[in-house]
Image (tube, rainbow, N blue to C red; front, side, top):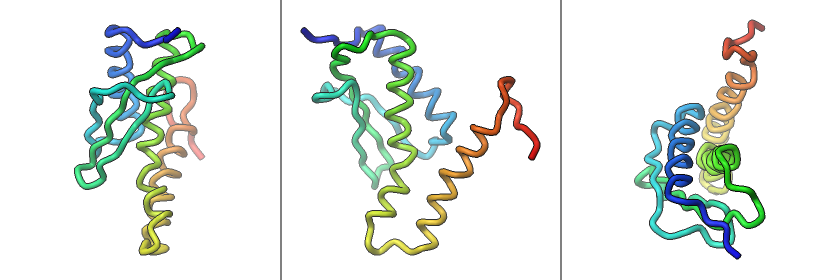
Length: 127
């Protein structure tokens, strides 16, 4: 038996994608919903690096209950793939310089530092 998100679920997922795109500072990516379902996954993301396009797809959630929280967490999961894409691509490219790898690593570290150092009111803690 399949457990496919409804059109309403897909709208909530799209809202979560936009939220996480902003939180993760991914404004230089065009992130769009694909037409085909994800295969053997709750969701997936594919990349067109030249166009800075990430295409996500929703799939079968299997035994996972589909609710706002599971949709939001799944959207975060897929956007983290986008967030890490440039670092992984640079690390896999034999022509990448040490400087490029350090730049991509610092992009990740700086944002994580900013996000993780906030208190419960969303205010950055002082060092």
